[in-house]
Length: 261
Picture 1 (tube, helix red, strand yellow):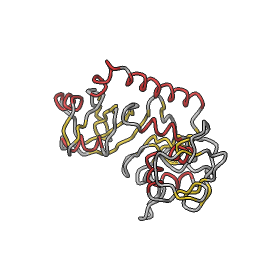
Picture 2: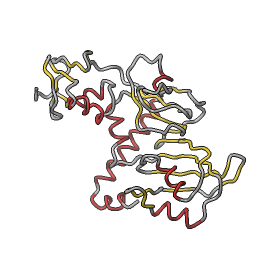
Picture 3: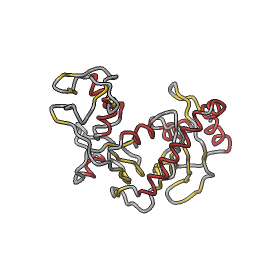
C-alpha cells in the first residue's frame, strides 16, 4: 500500500486504535474484514499511512483514540472477552461508560479474580503478552490442604502437564486460615489455567485464586468490579520493567538462563 516514513503496519495501527491485541487484529486482516482506501487487505505485511489513507474495519472507519490504560479488579464469574454468546458478564460490561474502545491484556479464567489490565495501547499490550519477556505476575491461592516440601520444589523445577511444562518462579510457605491454606505464587510465563492445573496435579482443591500484581503494578484497594486509570508513575514503572526484560532477553548469555527459569 505505502512505504513512506510515516507508514505503520496495519495490524499495529488497528491495535493502537483499540480493536484488540496485534494477534487479534491479524485475524481481522486475514479474514478480509479490513479495507484500506476501499480495497480489502488480507496480507499481514501491509503498511498504511493513517493520515493519508482511510482504514475501515467491519464497515466502520478506524481512527486513533486517546490512549487509556485501566486497572480493574475482576470479580469471579466475569469473563475476559468483548462479548459472550452465553450472556455472561464480561470485563467490558464493567466499563460500559468508557468512551474509548479497549481490550483486556491477557486473561483470568471465569472463577478467578483480581488484577487485570485493560487498554487500547497496542504496544503495551504486545509487550505484556509477548512470550519472550515474561513480566512476572503474582497470585494468592487458597487450597484445601498443605503442599509438602517436595511438592513445592517440584513446582519450581517444572511439572509436565498436557504437553507443556508448568512451573512457578517462586512459591511461599503455606499459611493456614479459615479460607484454607494460603500461598503466594509468582509466575513468569502464565499458561492457560496454570495454577489450577498445578494444584490438580497434586490433588488439591482450589477454594479461591486471586491475581494481586502484574510486574510492579499492584491491585491495592480496588474492590471487586472497581477500576481506575493507571497512574503515570505506574505506567513508568511498568514500561521500565518491560524494558529491563527486553534488555535481559537480548543478552546472549542470558537467554538460556531465562528459558530454564
